[in-house]
Image (cartoon, rainbow, N blue to C red; front, side):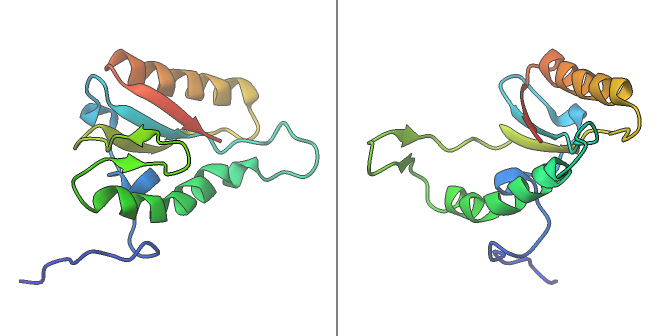
Length: 129
């Protein structure tokens, strides 16, 4: 049977920092949940924030590889600050929230409801967008 090997940082489908793509049912107390909010339709010119969640996730892939290597914590050599690796199931990417490009009220309600659902399950939501 074919076994998947470690993918290079530019390959594969994954969430923020190569966290697993998850659903609200997977959220437990203390989990950090990543929610995308690709919305910029209230901008009259130079739109682009709608691509933010995808761009941030793509840029985080290399760091995600670093987090998975080794067992110890990561240390910022300039400041000495220690970054503790998240445990299994503690960093979950819930994907992008539903956006309604022509309805700002429904879009903001969608963001509010997504954050509220994560919080109600004990998660700490981080919104990209």
